[in-house]
Length: 165
Image 1: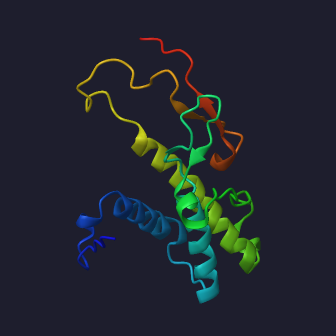
Image 2: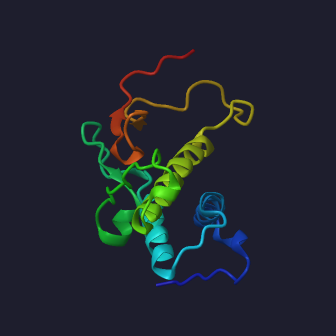
Image 3: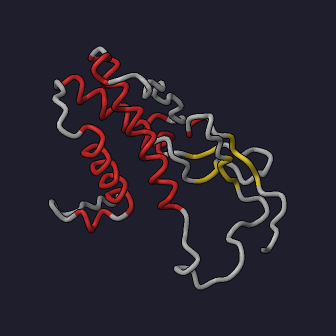
């Protein structure tokens, strides 16, 4: 076993996982803002947000196109995917929420913003890419976005045909 450590205060050495941590810290600052949370509330918010971050799709478990089971960071942590998305209570005013619902409200807001911003980061702009044509190949597993469902409940699809446009 070869252990590799990154120097303290040098997140540049962390690469992708440090970029994910950075995006989550920025969103926590934007969503929570100046709110005063107890230690237990902070732990709850961070645990829920950790579940959001660890439920993102990395790749598929199988190369079989008819079995698009996703591999997520949760598989490395608990051996299975994390599938509990926060309940949607964003329409309720914050001043009418109990402390528990307030924590759930913050988690839902952070989930919504992170999923939108994370998905935007995954999209590659055409001016950045030197290759022409689609990046998708037949058999590639993709997420089918549905605005009426939380991201953890989006269906997985398999590309059957690629049309050049």
